[in-house]
Image 1: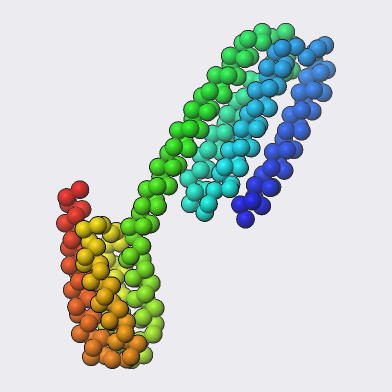
Image 2: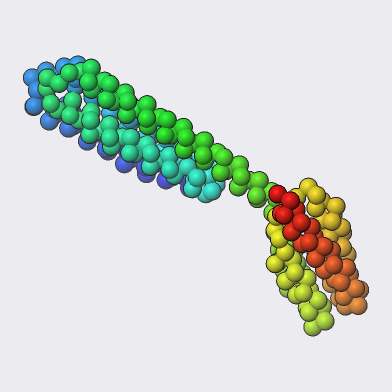
Length: 235
């Protein structure tokens, strides 16, 4: 999907580049008698800005997953701003003859440096946010999986007694703190064992055993919630 989007983006980029060349060499050629150093300075920096925008778009649109795309969108915005500013400054030197080439070189180089710095900062920020998101995804994996399993178990409960106890387990899991921690590994292992036993009892339609195990499971879930609160107060 992202490759297709990049293909459409590349087509628009190519059309814009062609329009720039028409303006630069046709209109610029009519406004000046020769293509002096000022023209080539403006032309080269604008061309580099166009290529930079395409490279940034490739990096953003070929990222893995929608989350990475969301985090990298600011890169494209910054790159477009850099291109627009370079176009404004560079176009002056492309179309107006007799301007000092060294002034154009300094201005365009300054714009490029500032743009690169902004891109590096945005890229670093995207990586940091991505790492935090991956960490959160890992830390919440246990409770998210348990929520899905308990919901599926609720759907498989055949009797009112089993459904009542399965719903109680599901609601407790659903509203438990999703964040995990190394200090919770022991109690989470116990929860996994008791949930497996609870799942077996529900599957066998053993209401009495399921109710007894559910009481143990709920006690463990409540104990985990208490530890979560304690860990948060220590941070």
